[in-house]
Amino acid sequence: MSDELKIVLEDVKEKFDTVIEAFDMVKEKLDRHEQTEEERFQRIEDRFDRHEGAEREHFQRVEGKLDGHEGRLQRIEDRLTVLQKDFNDHRENTELHVVKRKKKVS
Image (tube, rainbow, N blue to C red):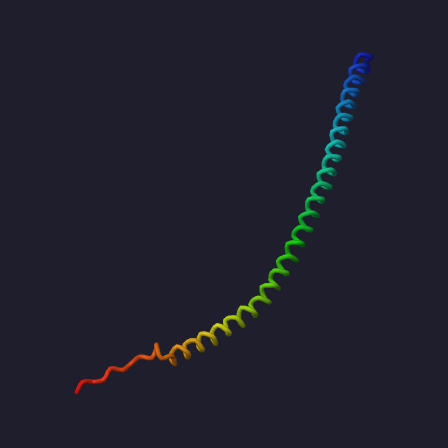
């Protein structure tokens, strides 16, 4: 091989080495960026999971309170039914509300 060819091949090899080195640097930077983004995503996901869990607990507490109120509402409805019946009975027994029957003319 001629000396000129050796010099050209050596120059091409150095340029390839430079390109390979640059490629490796970019790959390392991308790997670091990927790791950083993965950590960031994991933190966001953890926050979401905590928030979701808190919301689920809150919903269960509200649901429990509503269940307790359903029983109270039923008792109130029952009382109102009794009061309405008593009121209607009282009304029917009051003189002012008694329907007077007209006497038939003979």
